[in-house]
Length: 255
Image 1 (cartoon, rainbow, N blue to C red):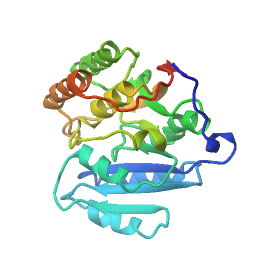
Image 2: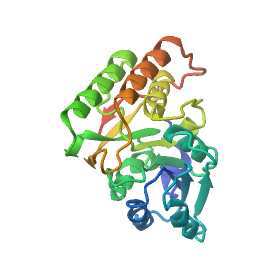
Image 3: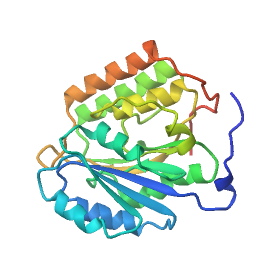
Image 4: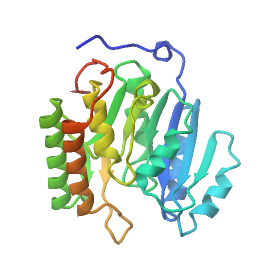
């Protein structure tokens, strides 16, 4: 594979960071997520909040966020799914680097910089925060098994070792994500973007992050149907999707 492309912003100027937060009925955790996101030490940034037609107090919380000049608040008129909310955010971001931040507290926004810094430093164009080379708390065994299967499928199907396909912390240089045609509407965003990025021959760097699982009673929305959708998505991309102009960049490595 070819040499890593080093972008100008990695040579001294702080690149602009876009943080996309898809939201659906997260009134309990959203204020704290926003507080932590605003506290990260990255001045050149924008926060894109996408409300996927929440039915709780999310709209009222987001109304107050409109006052910030670095913030965009987008709203779906009907519930469309997490993938659709992320795609809406991707239609409006203007940064050099973009990362997805969930609206719950399973992932700690303080670790955003750990995931985006390798891209800013020119080490990679795609970086995932892996829970399984970091730390995992309270994840049920069936969920661990499902995550292991999906990671192994990615490794087997696309020839690059991945430890955490389903991580929410996925960061991309804009030159990559703007080239990936996404069709996802629900939780299949993760397998679709992962498999298409790899089929386009971009390397994925993984860095350790921490994760504290919540239960369905606490608001967790992903379920077993989403696991089978993920399996099908990985297989479909591998067998039927054709990548145009593959990048030919380095393969997966860990830091």
